[in-house]
Length: 488
Length: 151
Image 1 (cartoon, rainbow over the protein chains, first blue to last red):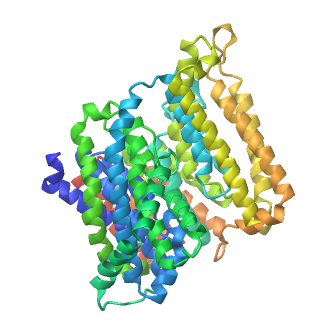
Image 2: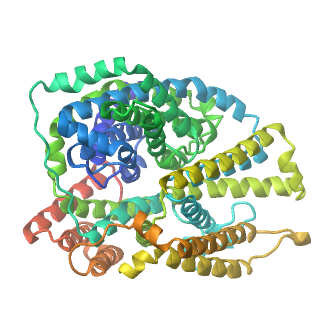
Image 3: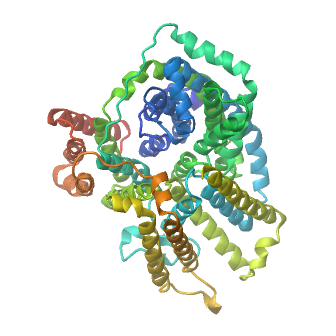
């Protein structure tokens, strides 16, 4: 805990925030990519430094995703796309400092609400999780996968296909229950399975390089310069708006928390849902309010995505999916026992969320708003070569194995084709993370009950999760059908 | 390319069905448990079933509403000549990295990869060279000196 307040800890937070603001602000770079590229560095850091740095990166990157949207109408992160038009219009009509002020202050308030709920509920969920057996874990994994299908903004069928591809990749290597090697094609490198982090770097990082090589477009922007009364526009006006529209902030933050809590959803979906709800309300079409709704929900979701990650070991979004990989690298087992075995680490994580939202967001928000114009003017094609270098080194450095570089390239190629076909990528990651959990717990449960499949429906908690899975499936299908028919 | 855009769901459907069939057949070589219970093939076969059914559904959907699907989510079109060649160049540079690393050493190999990507993005030679040199040097110092990672 004290390590967080050491000079190394504070430096990790400050550099993490700076790195996150850079990644979020550059169009094409995402919070997930920032965290994925940070993993090779996190691998060699103390967990007390690495995990707070990741929180700072993701919290600031989600906010900074609005910078590109405000000045150039290019969303820095998928979460920013939910209120892109309103944010950009507000920047043009008033000032980028004002629109980014709403974004930073709304993110900070939403993040604090999300953190408070994380602190209050994670221990309770962990206590409940102590009663879980392999049956419950199987249903929770299935619940996460079902929620993941509807978590993308596109076609649920394509989300399902991406999920299945992720599940397929998770079956490469030695079977986790029976020990039989699968899909190794006589290559010893594949016996230990596909490296999760290498796959992530390829899926998100290298596919971005390929996408830009293919499209050959260099996003450029001209920022509106408004340096007069900067602090008034950035801090005072947005805070007055938040006080005036406190119910929008509270409602959207709670929406973000509820969506972010679902395994597989996260900040992107949280922002989309909150903005959709705000737009559905009669006489609530003001740009300020919609930006406030979206931005407060996405950072609330950033915090709440950690609730299932910490208490159940299930990722709430792609960032926490990577974080779970970092936990495993460090020999830390997330789940109910984490709160007993690593209380210092859990407290440090909570505190980091508070620091990130109270101090880092306004600080870096102000800096990035002032520097927004400069930042998005850096030629992306120059940055792209650096990203390519980081992808190569990131994949290679984990095991110093050239094979990992080729796996990374293959993943990048696959992700490029999936993007071209309109298939989401987050679901691939979700499948890779939840696949082994689901398979192992299914096989364990089936073998210990002598393949009596009715045993999956006998325990009360298992039935609750089964009903939740069913409910998410039914509600997802109904809501999506209505949405699609409304679009027609 | 336009044909591929308008038929991309149909193409995806075909690929998915092929993948599912291959997966189903390959999984048949995995052993079964005693008393005939499914073994390591169970999950791969369930995935194959899901992929096959999804492929069929996607194919039917694309045949029913080909125009609508092309209009709703057409990916960004490439600018400039030879988009696939640029991509192949980028992939080739990265695929060759392990060999270059063995032959030239880490910093020169990374320099070549960064330079190749920058040149493929039509960055001027001097700027590409400077960027690649800076990136290779910074990444090397970051990993080997600051983080003590052997490369």
